[in-house]
Length: 497
Image (cartoon, rainbow, N blue to C red; front, side):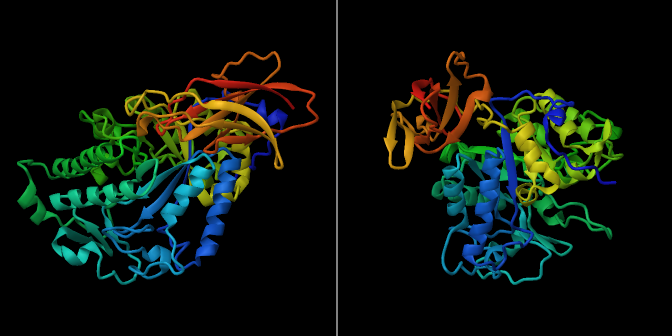
């Protein structure tokens, strides 16, 4: 059954919508490349598509983009270690012609729109089942004994210590050469269990590097956790403001297994037992900066009920911001159990807001940009009607930047423009990278905790004022945001519009 699309109007907006407007909220979207949608595409066409995505994201309130740049030990950027991606040029190791750097371009275009860019990598996958040749400089050709095959896939062996060091070097290379805001990984750790009696061929690695751990499953979890710890330390050393986030499979552990491991009332594949990813351990150790479980199922799913899972994650992920991975297509496909005439966007978002979740990320970006089922437009009108600052992360940094200087409206040939000057900074952590613009009508209290007064978040040091005959008086307030999202004190200016 497919539910009716949401047509937004006043009656709908008043019918069961939790209309709280958080000032801080992560509003992300994934742009994947491993599906091959850009393979061999001309530069101008790929940039046109990505520009459309980013413009639609900006219009509909998205403030962070997860862009996949490492699919299988390759790169959609100029890497010091790995070949150009097959999923970019159609031939692994072949540079784009005419030359361009997709990651560099995406960082610039996201920042231009006031959005964060999180570089999304897959740590262990070395080759998908797609039949294509591997470049001569692929890391597999240098150290073939550091990899194993699983079905038609090739993976970096998580039990090989060298691989952890190598992946950290790859991440360090990205951070040193690109102004990314985050480093993001999804749910692929040890391989998803395959049919036909497939087993993970890590006997030799276990014999060599078991560290006295008797239980093979516990040893595999140790291997993955060591990578997460090392990546955390690498990021903090190279660029301490970069956010490290992981988007695990939506079920951590099934309660029916019993034992001391927290579990949900679900019956599906598990992070803990099947992928050897102990996400709660990483959260509680402070090794990651946000957790983004993929809750792509519908409310009422018999094996993995959305409401059961979001409540479980909200209960157990408290040491770091919890962000929910949402499926655009599944949210519009299934009816709201409480109101079968509409789909599940409203009840899902209501659960997020009522549970104090730090935000959401939309799978996938193309479906959101295309406004499937009126999903993006409904989000824009009902939940993302005002821009939002990123979630606070005081564990990274809590010192606010200085306030902006010389705030002044000036008439130019392009119209009435509000200009300001960036504040001075004592260190890179204090630098202003974006600015929040608030507007208050005459007589309104200047309450900056009220997100309804935010009109834009921008990386520019100017804002075009909506002048209309100069009859109404407003006060504009501008604050500075640093790289982590700390907000400065306000600078205000009265204008007539």
